[in-house]
Figure 1 (spheres, rainbow, N blue to C red):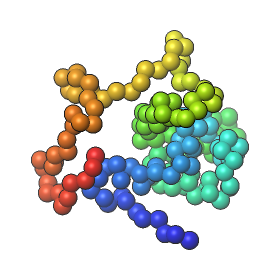
Figure 2: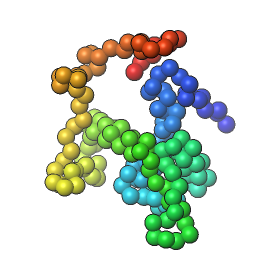
Figure 3: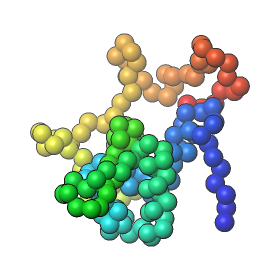
Figure 4: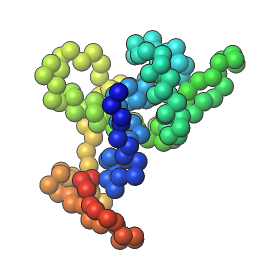
Length: 158
């Protein structure tokens, strides 16, 4: 078995994020949780994931503070997995991934759903990055600078 490299101490915040949520199963579990899945069986049914892999992913996300265990909302003896604020903060990342796929997928007609505003029923606008003064930014309009407070050993992408 290949040992996974840990990135939680990396200087790069993208690498640190990938350490917490960087495998596809974790992102798909979070996606399902954002849209209402809460129980182990729901995740397993939706994803077709082996129980042992799902158990490890859920435990890791609880340990990372992305999910928390809570008593079942129906009053039964079961526990449910509930997104924390940290977990709900992943929503824009999933929207960005979805929109990237919708734009660049070779077969976009096969994408079965569209993301719409629940209240108005209209498609969600493409995510964009803006400067503090309101200018639309692309990658060429940004640069990485060292943090003013504290010494950094190296500067990496993003």
